[in-house]
Image 1 (cartoon, rainbow, N blue to C red):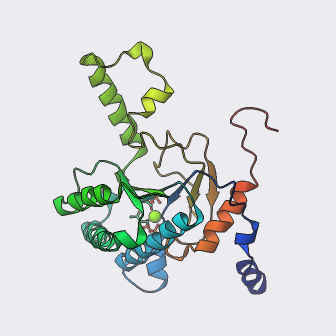
Image 2: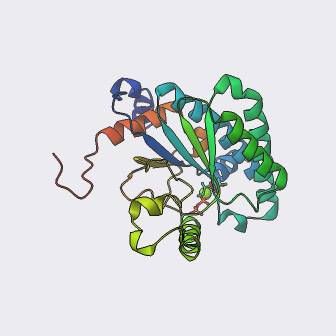
Length: 253
Ligand code: IPE
Ligand code: IPE
Ligand code: MG
């Protein structure tokens, strides 16, 4: 088994990916930080730190291979349920991550956006999100969307409320509501739906991520924990994606 695993690891997935047929949009549920830390006898916060580092590596790699959109789940509307010290460690790490991202901005040149209600986040963090977004908006190449205090249901409720408000104020008409214009009320306004949703860590669930947008996404699960999820793991997911037959309700080819 060990031999088989190590042989599998050495596979050259890059040679198997057709880089002319990449998905436009890949979304990742960055899960498994806590278990990664536990296996090493470290505090959960160390896992979140390692996860943040890995996010930088994978985001930069996505730019390198020419992906258009990468959306990552960093903190959900449900993650506030965690012990206060873990939540505050995550907020601290996010702050540190964004400060470093701003420092490295000219080198990495990654366009960053945020999905989610940022208002309950610590003020300093909110301002850093805003600053990161503003400075990076003109960069070409991959657009990275970081989901912070994001929940798919919360996003849909907000969209419904905003639409209702527009109706009350005469800017919208319920008779003209359709899927396309409803999408414009979502955090993801203007971003194409994800083609591929990857969940590391062995969990096989959606956990309130991009509920509307992933209607026709391909799902890919792996047991690898997020901090260990390598460029080769991403390529392996792309190989799997390219072998799928997407029919969108039709009969395919
Ligand atoms: C994902 O890793 C990070 C966040 C949800 C913030 P977890 O912290 O959920 O890691 P596990 O699932 O406990 O291993
Ligand atoms: C989903 O992971 C949220 C993020 C990765 C940010 P969770 O660890 O919170 O999901 P559950 O609780 O296992 O469903
Ligand atoms: Mg988890």
